[in-house]
Structure formats: structure tokens, C-alpha cells
Length: 551
Image 1: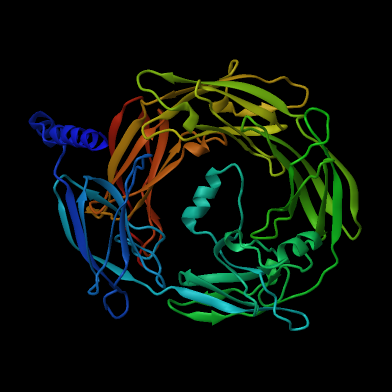
Image 2: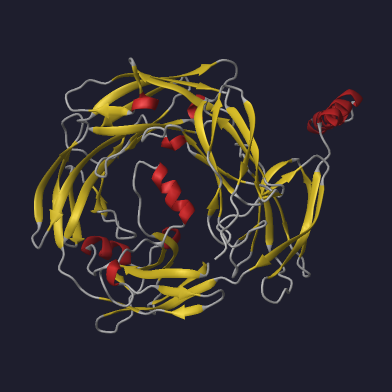
């Protein structure tokens, strides 16, 4: 009986596949695929780099976006077949080398590869540059090796990252981590895969088990003790202003040894009260260094059954003590308090959760189209350095709750919208939160936030030229005009393709300022252009980058 059922099912499937009408319909709809091929070689000798991973990643990603990839053979050759027409980020990677983007001229990103139906792109050449390495030992002041210490290579942000940071309500860090390592039982570390450039090296006593692997009783003991050593920058200083800037060449391996020294630390203890007035259990309490550091120890612990906590091994300095508890509705209850740490223990800290403002919300769709509400998240992004934001997951019926929103000023942001969709309006009563932000003050009641989304996002395409030639890999930036602290998150960037063209999709209607920049070898920019976009608009503009000045 089981066999006959299987045979009938298989036959049904076979007939469905062989249906002439279905086959004809599919053939009519599917444009011919594309093929991309080339070689991966070293930048210096030009020798083949076998086993490199070469990938095409859709520029405008969807949830169902597929990455098309291949591995180079012994001669460095690769071929990626059956690629749909479209716009792709194109790159090659290999252990021991720096990731190489298509048509990269040494910047952080290269050009987009635009493929037309049935196109064959041949002879693409990726020139791989050897990655640099920092290695060395971390010892204590007695010369004993220190295992499970965190060592980080820090770099200054690029011009592009500085621009992106300006779009964020938070100022961000002055230095950015470029690579991490954890010392082994010999106190030895190795940070690999680094680009050539300038770095600072820092070591901190911050034990995080790799892949949740606990080594002996190390985790329990160090959690009980807290931090006992001061973070140190090479060549053995505690301030970044005194640290030595190290320069790495391609493929260079530089040895950097560090010594951590004992410091006097204190204990911070206290109690948390929940929104119901009872001791708050299972709350994560952690310290955030002020001003925000480049990379430091994250000291935190959960409250016990009495709502009490003790954070040990805290070095002198300025901190904000944060407490965060997730409710069953996937929203946050939290509280914060500024703490000045000196040479004495701080006891009897009292924090009360659930004393912020609660907001109800509803998400609606304007016009045609449907979305899966439960895939979206609502974010309130704080403009205060000592204030946590708030978030909530939208339910299937489009409702959400933002619980315990603290005092402060917030920008609205929404995660999880599909390609082409945009946030059309966000209102709290008569207040336009997209234009004016959300102001939360003690004593004020919440309300209902009405969010409307639409799939009528605009498209903006264009070209970038210099001296009447297409600029490959130029960075195009579109910003709201006028730009405010609340609409900066609508800023977008894109790179031009091999023909100097760029593309933006799903842009919220409005007035924008568009500019193109090229960073090779000097930074040159186009004159800004203004564009006004309405729903479902498809506009095209041309940008001309000035010729670099001769010196």
C-alpha cells in the first residue's frame, strides 16, 4: 500500500513538471541568465591564488536574496553561471589576504557589477593583497603569561565612516576595532587579516569564552573577582593620547608585547525594583564607560532572587549604570544612573524599572501591498549619551507596545521592511515624529503612535562622470534637504558600477541633496544637486566630479 501511494505521487509530480503550458509560461517569463568569469592572482607577483571564494551579492538585498559564488581553481580561474540580471557587489576572499572588491582602487569598497540579461562578463581580475598580522605576548608585571586576555587592533575611521557617523544620533567612537584575538595559555595572541595601515594595540582583562567553551573554573573565578588589571595601550600606557601608532605594510607581521598591571578596584552593589514594585529578578546590570571608550571591559551581572546585584573589579572613572529586563512582550524595561567611581566601594544603589512612559502603537499599510507585520521592529533611537533607546516587535495584527521609554529625545526608525517599502508617516496625536522626533518627559502620559508604511518608494538612478568619462566606484550620497537630527537616518549611499551608473530604490518621498565623491588618489566631489521625489517616482540625474588639482 505504501509503495503504490509513493508511485502515484511521483507520477503526479512528473506530469506537473512536463506540462507544456507550464513550461512555456516559465520560459516566457525567465530572461536568459548571465555568466561571470575571471582570475584571482596576487597583487605583487601575479601568481594564481587557488581556493579563493568569489561572490556576487545583490546590491538591493531582499529577504530571499541569493548569493552566487564560486571557488577558484589551481590556476586562479573561476566561473559563476546562471546569475540573474541585476546589480551586485562583487568580491574575492581568501585566508591570509585582504578582501578584494571589484574594480577597487585601494578604498574600502569598489564598484558595483551591473549585469544585463544574458550578459557574459569575462576576464575579471582580482589582485589580492597579503593581509598584515599583529602577534605578541601579554604578561603580568611579574612576567607571568596571562591567558584569555582580549587584545584588539584599533584604527581611525575612514572618511566614509566619519560621514556615516554624522548621520547617527550617537557620535560613536573615535577609534574602531579592526581585529580581535584572545591570548592562549602561553599569553600569546595573533590578530590576522588586517589591511595595511596605522593601528593602536590595546589589551584588556575581559574574559569572554570562545564559542561558549569554558576552560576549567576560569569563568566562575574571574566573574567573582571582576577586572583586576588596567587596560593598556602599547607601549604600556593607559591613555590613548600616549599610545604609539603602529604602521603595518601589506603582508607584514609585527610583534607587539604588552604588560598588564594590577590596579585597585571597587565594588558597586545595589537593588532593583520592578515595574510591579517587587524585587526585579533576572535583570542584566552593566556599566558603560563615559565618555564611551574605543574598546573596553563590559562589566555586568544579573540580579539574584532578591533583585540585588554586585559588580566587582570596577576601576576608577565615570560610568553609567544600566539595568535592562526583557518583558514577555519583547519590549524593554530599563533604568540608568550615572556613577562616579573613586577609591571606595559604592553600596545601596537603588534603581526602579518601569518608571518611564508607555506607548501603544499600530502599524498600517497605505495603498496596495501587504507585509508580514511580525517581521518588523520599531526602534526609538536616543539622542542622549546616558539614555537607552526603546524597541518593540510588531505583532501579527499590526499592534505594538513601547514600554518604559525613559526621559529624552528620540528619532524613529523601523527595521525589517521589504525592498521598495518606506515609512510614510509616524504620528503621536498631531505631532509628526518623523519631522520633530519624540520628546519624553516625566509625568506625561503616553498615547498611541500611528505608523503608516507604503510600497510606493521612489527610485533614483544616474551617472557620475569626470572629464566626460564614467567614474567607476564613485560613492554617491543622498541626504534629506534640509537635514535634521530626526531625518538623518534616511541618508543613503551607493557605489557606481563599471559604467559609472548608480541606483537607489525604496526612497521615502521628499526633497534630497545628492553628491558624488571619489577618493583616488585625492578626495574630489561633484557639485550637489537637488531632487524632489514623489511616490513611485523613477528619476535620473547626472553628476560631474571635478578634476583633481595638480600639485
